[in-house]
Image (cartoon, rainbow, N blue to C red):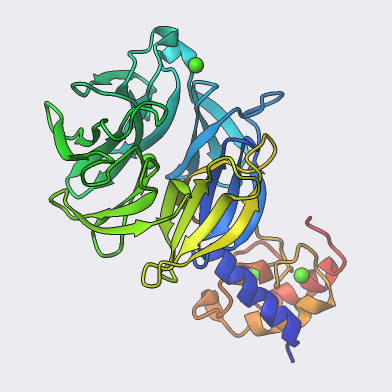
Length: 375
Ligand SMILES: [Ca+2]
Ligand SMILES: [Ca+2]
Ligand SMILES: [Ca+2]
Ligand SMILES: [Ca+2]
């Protein structure tokens, strides 16, 4: 008979493996993992560097495209790539590619659309830089008339939206914030406003909700999340008090996960969830607004890769021991793995003679592997 704790472990890790979030952090200079179901912490500092001897220095957005994690770093003027296990692969583009003070980005139809603010490295100032994701070829620059300081790019319907506004150190009451549609040529205005009119002020990350609308992290005043319809009209506002939202994501439990910073108050930077019905903010993980504390930024969906197969390790704890025996016997009853009820640990883990099947021929090799350690 299978024992209870192992079953609980499989349930635990199957759900964890199914759905997560990647959260960049500009103070810890790293990327964290959180549950996309309820926002709970999975792993701090999942990604911390960019190759031998290179530390991140203001990680802004991490986005999974295909079998790679793409990561923009504001101060290193670089976009890096990693395996889904978080292992560094390469620097996709850097200062030599005429980018400076970069923030969020999006990848669509084989093109990287990267927000750019600075003019160092021959970069164009406020604009969207375009690169071919297969070759890193420079595909040119999209400029927005009166472009100020772009923060994020996201796909929304047939559009490709870029959030844009000046820094909050200028006068946000008079300043016009714009969400551009850069899929149009010349670029179109999807939405515009100001702190003093409809509240749109320093929009940063944008995300698409399950109801088809756009949710915007409104980092200026009033601090809020703004929900926009397909016509660019604000149809709901979720006030956040003094919390300045940088990034956001709609969790599978319906709450909104928010990566934010407060106004210099110790212990209030961090990750929160918002109940849109009650307006209640619940802290998930908090830190100080100091280096080494927390300054979380953008948030994107992440599906961790399935665990590596270790022949004979049927509960995927990394070792082959007596705890695997009952599950091995159970695996013999699922020809070709059809209907195998444990998504957290693959059926083929029972294949100990490397023929791709779990059969009686595996019994002796399985017994021989008891005591093996794949960790
Ligand atoms: Ca720079
Ligand atoms: Ca983005
Ligand atoms: Ca095991
Ligand atoms: Ca076999």
